[in-house]
Length: 330
Image 1 (cartoon, rainbow, N blue to C red):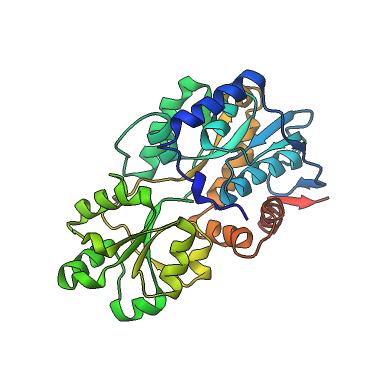
Image 2: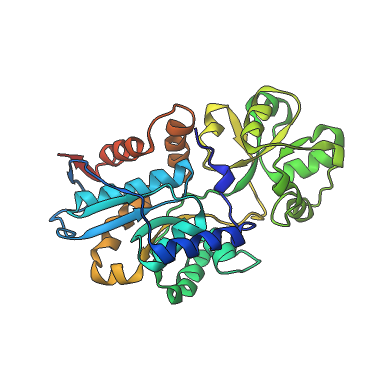
């Protein structure tokens, strides 16, 4: 099963991603297959406003983003469009470049990724809506339009097993800082190598919360192992996680509140090739209700179906859209 996190952040891989993007832009995307689902409008797509349209959807290559890309495609399909599925591209940069160039018409992107990775800003904006507005306004010049965001926030966090938290009663990162001062040996943390050295990772978090963890208390490992180590062993009291990961609930972890709002907002929002949106302005009305329903908790449930239970992202997306009444099976 493909892990989500090797491609979750592209902030340190721009050079390789940009090279791939140039290849894609130069020769066009070749992969993809038509969506053949027999779906019809539910609460969205009535009157099939995209009848006669031929649209392409894309995504990055981790489970959550594939699910979101499939949702866009299925909504377009129910609204009458012929849809080409080009989800699961090899990097954030390649998916973005596809939308910029018009090789794809829409994807779900993350506001923090847009602001920091693509637009080059070092400092995130704390208020989620202000962050989205800033990205939306700045990115228009690149030929893409950000539609209204969801509250699905796929950002960094620290988590603790509920078993261990029965002893420590940690709720916030400030609680962790207090514990680190009171009992430094108790606070052991498992993190990825990159998170351990980034200013917007562990060092910046320590500075923001006034804590200083001994080097011996920081254990570096692959992202996929962290969840297991925190859940089933005593090697880490805390572990780096991503807030929408389905393993959080499956492995009975408590996510600690970032009460000082240190970590950037990574709210998912549809990004549409601007020329496509001008041709089919109905797209905004189709996707806004979907984004309003997408939350961090919803994402955890859907991601777990793929990453824990092994279900197909397309079927997970379709089942949820049908369950929520957005579309119906024909």
